[in-house]
Image 1 (tube, rainbow, N blue to C red):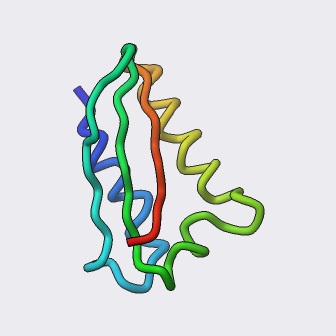
Image 2: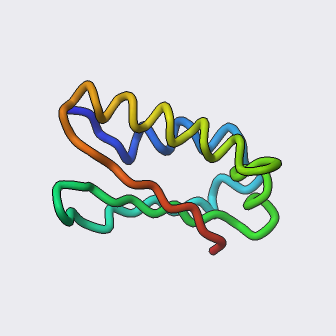
Amino acid sequence: MVNFEELIKSLILPLVSFPEEVEIAYIGEEDGVESYEVKVAKFDLGRVIGKGGHIAQAIRTILYAKASKEGVRVHLNIIEK
């Protein structure tokens, strides 16, 4: 079983300037979808989302691919702390 919180952390931490500000939380499961929330410092939000949301989409793609191999569905929400 994949620890999605650790996977998300390994994808997010290299991108931010303030890794101590990153919070990753499991929100729960609804309709078979596991939800996670990532809170980053205001300064780092743009770095994690990227121009046009391309970095955030790449992070989600990696996460969804791993989840698909595990037979689960996940949702990732990235917000400002």
